[in-house]
Length: 136
Image (cartoon, rainbow, N blue to C red; front, side, top):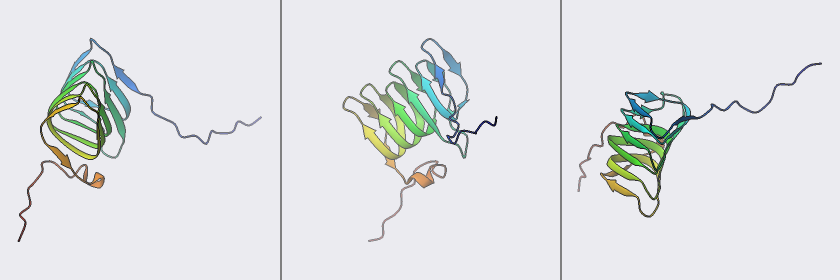
């Protein structure tokens, strides 16, 4: 008897950083990462991969964040947050500039910083926004 291979693509298992867990240093992930604990350091997806970061209501990240999709309902502090799709839920508390392709902001979310829209395809190219002079 021959077994037929499944036509469904393999999905990377998600990771959870639970409440009471504290990580100091750089965190790199692919697939999905749910944070209810604390991270002091950058959180990112390796170049060429995609990933969804969910920062739960009890979670905290102090450092730069980047991902294909970022959902924040906790506290994030950092120099910049890069996301192709960014969702700020009602308990989100963000201190730092947000660079995004698409954004959704729920009532109650608080941002202390600039909201900077940029095309999704320029995600990796954007390091710091530059002001362009307008001829007139």
